[in-house]
Image (cartoon, rainbow, N blue to C red; front, top):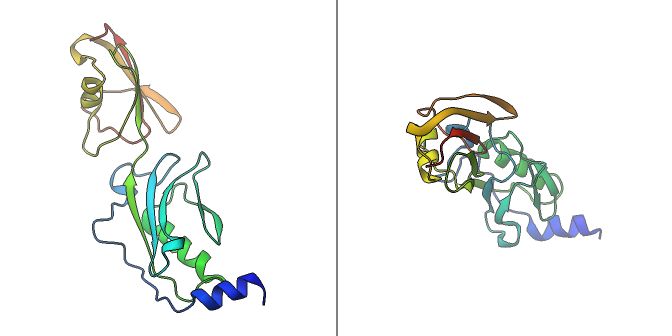
Length: 176
């Protein structure tokens, strides 16, 4: 019997779940752009611990899963990724897979320029650019200008704007 048929025979019998796990955070609630490289998700296949685990999206926005290989997660919400994983597993591997995808951590933000500690920092929902500047040891009162690069587009910004995962902040002025 071919390996695919044997795996399907051994692993068949799961049920479909299209609801997300309680407490799961949809990526669109934070950045509107969905998942991106550096984000971490937990993918759980009910009754299949060998197929479940934590994954960080690679530089191409892919997650690599047992049996099915690379799945494109770039720009997808956790709910959309769950649907893609269900479809991939149901295509010859599992009968009616029950899958949940939970957002574990967003990609970091970066800050440079007139701050005491430039570098990358963990993203936290609800932060503003002012919060990020403060965390990096800068001061908004000494800033001459503030630029923000988001999604490959750089522009002037204000300190009260919401911070998003992957933002790159450049504070020009006197280091705090």
